[in-house]
Structure formats: structure tokens, C-alpha cells
Length: 265
Image (cartoon, rainbow, N blue to C red; front, side, top):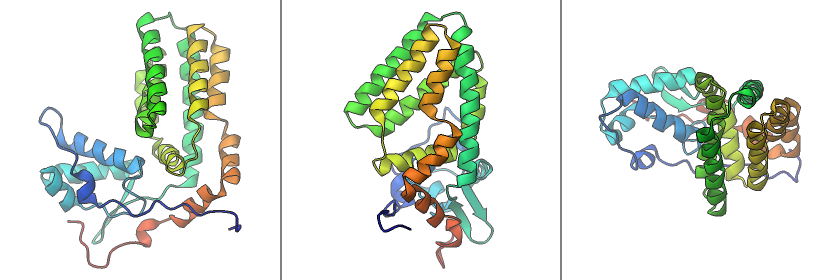
């Protein structure tokens, strides 16, 4: 690694018990879905770090749930590629994988191009147009307040609405299943102050305006400028070598950081 590169670290992982104290489950939604969503969001936000042990027993105790929905949630997370369940050892958060990241970037770009182009040729729904404007205003407020987690949530909501406007909302749900490593990288950049909030707002506005003007070519151009081409994503690692260094150093974390005596059950 060049001497000028400062390695990226996430600092000490937050203890799972402490992390889950702020959450409570409700009786109006399946427990498995709630536990899955809580853990997934915390992994994506890197509050649960690559290599960290995720104890089934601790989760059940803190969330006051039985082990069955916890186990089912962990299985879903393993299917998503976010945890690795190791027999007789435990469950561990997976590393960010550069090949999966690049594949996910490609998937996102292609599906979102299709979404904004289709949204641009649909009859204008004024209610949805006003919703996009409100989201943009809320993003401005979140950026001014330096509430970057809220900024990310609103970013997701805006892009979800592109699929809603295009008449294929289910494709957004499909896309989400491929974006775990993309979103973890976005949070990694946020944590390390690799941020471009004002530029993102400007790019979002350009996409929304193109859709409102029913111009699919302009919408696609604005979307590509916002997300970036696959080549630009790869080039970003050259521009920020500490990102690549972090990914290389956290590869196969569960192989490096398993506690000797701690049980996951």
C-alpha cells in the first residue's frame, strides 16, 4: 500500500446487545420479518461490522423473541449474502465482496435506466410528482442537519418512487435484494467523509425534472450521470485506494475473528 494511503477502519464494533436495545418488536407484523429488517439495516449501515459475531441467543434475549423467528431471519440474511452461518461456530457478518459490488452496480444501473425511461413516458401523475418534490425538499433539510442516515433513507425512497412511477414497483423489491454490498459501500464512504451530498441533490433534481418533462433520453442521461457507469465505479477505487485496501483487509472476516469460546446459541 502506498505510504500516502490512510487505511480505513470502522473502529470498535458495537456490541450486539447494546445495538439492539433501541429496538422493540410489535404484534402487527411477523416477527421474522421485523428481526430480518432490523439486522439487515444494521449490517448495511455497518453498525454490525464485517466479521462480527451475530448471536442467535443474544438477539432472542434482547428482542424478547423465541429462537425460531431469529433463526429464520438469519437464514434469510444468509440467502442475501449478508451473514455466514458456520456450523458449531456461529453466525458472522460477511465481508463486502468487490465482485458482488461490481455486479450489483451493473444491475442497478440497467434496471434504473429502464425505470426512469418508462416513468418519463407514463401519463403524469401529479400526486407522484409532488411526492418527488417533497422528498427532494426533505433531502435538503437532512443534508443541512448533517443527518446522513436520513439522507440515505430518503435517497432510497426517491429511487423507489421511480419504479412506482414506471408502473413496476415489484422490480424495486427485486433490485433491493442485489444491493446489499452497494449500500454498505455507500455507508463506508459516508463514515469516511467521502461524501457528495450537494452534487447528489443536483443530480436528483435533474432526473426528476426530466421525468416531469416526459423526456426519457434526458432522464437516462441524468440517471447515468448520477449513478455513474461501471467504468466510473471501478475507477473510484483507484481514486480512493483506501476503499480497496479496506475490502481486501476484511475479506473472509469470519475466518479471522471468531472468538475461541463464544457460542452463537
